Length: 289
Image (cartoon, rainbow, N blue to C red):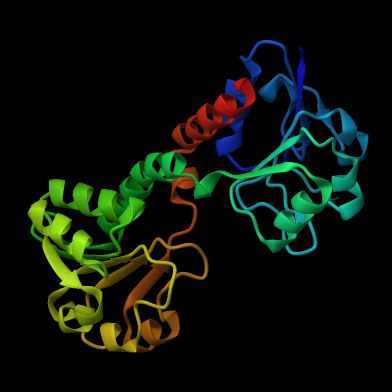
């Protein structure tokens, strides 16, 4: 049976995603939001949103950022205004699978009311772990670009020991940095110590930033506050890898003259081809089930 997939919007990662999906047998792909690219670039027919027939779609692939709270999508490769309204969702058949990177309350509500399956890809452990690799490499790239000293021998503190924090700490340590990791749970502190890194209880973080060269936050909560920033040396850098708006008091960092960078969507910036391959592999698993 032929599968009909609509790819609506997307960034550089989606060019590799589309290339991978094209190779699936018995699959037709319809592209919306790619009209600023030459058709030969993707090798597929490009459509306007109004030309889609929602009731015929087996799958819909939305951008990593999903939609805003009114259902609007901002495509990277098009000037077309695209809105996924309640009426549009109601036209989808109940077996349609809708993929997105992030699912906000609007998307969840529309999926529930229309009876379709919504898959927030970035919530999946496999996607997050694979994505942690280009995220860590991006953090290393920024550290090299933004400093006048080597990573080797630098004092690096990573806050959080989840899927991203674990990989970031591991990669910086492999480059010779003196890595400390601040975490909340006893089992994480034990694992950090077992890895040969310095374990810091998260509530004690403010007592350890005085000698920190690079502070990397991976926790999507208010973690890097005035208490932690006020003791940082003037040359220190803060990289916030958490989802927007991050977990850093950026205003206070600026007041102190500390450079603090909210590093959004690093996989799509550092390694869009790899990031697209990761998304494609997961989506193909769902479609082949």
